[in-house]
Length: 140
Image (cartoon, rainbow, N blue to C red):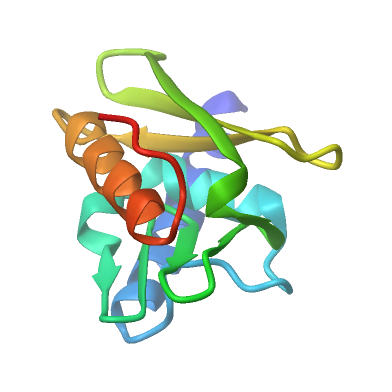
């Protein structure tokens, strides 16, 4: 039974990953359920889904707009200036969790899940750079 569930979840993740590759945004929209974003983040490699333009950066379900300083994750919006800290931990050899502490009563902790070897370091560096470029604190 659990094997069948695992196969269904992997298939679901592959479907959304391919949908992302065909031109859809890697950042979730407000209409996307949060559970779907977490599953897609666990079963796909978020480094391949990175999008960078002059105005914004998005990867692994988080989008940061440089001019406005607005950050969006799972339909929740916060500002780069409200970010207090970024920490991470390794869940397993391939799974990582990045925690963003935000000064916000509604959602004070933003969790981002990454899957892959050596993806966490590059993701955290890009995240810190994007937050700094959007007017947030410098985490160097």
